[in-house]
Length: 100
Image (cartoon, rainbow, N blue to C red; front, top):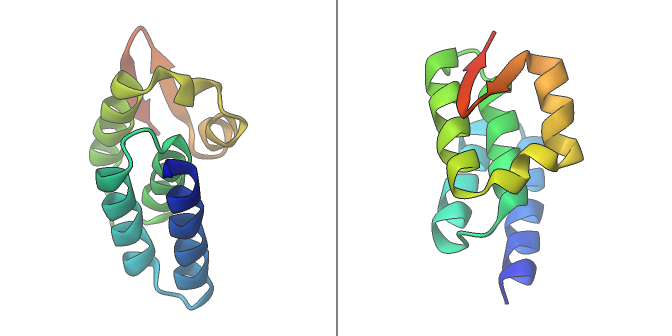
């Protein structure tokens, strides 16, 4: 069941973050997204992790967000994503994405 697997991935990600293992948390997101295409929560978590990481370029961040919303536009309506838009200056207009 996809929802239970997504929940398991989210728990792993939370544990990695709590241990300061941000790289493993991001890798776990990507692995989960690869296994569970409809996992919007994992995509939003991955977006958050990328935005928090100063080593990740804003262009790459915007490109990844654009890929996710093209495949799953309902991400734009999730409260978690709306919070990220405000917090990290993510802008989405007419299918184009950029992050400040």
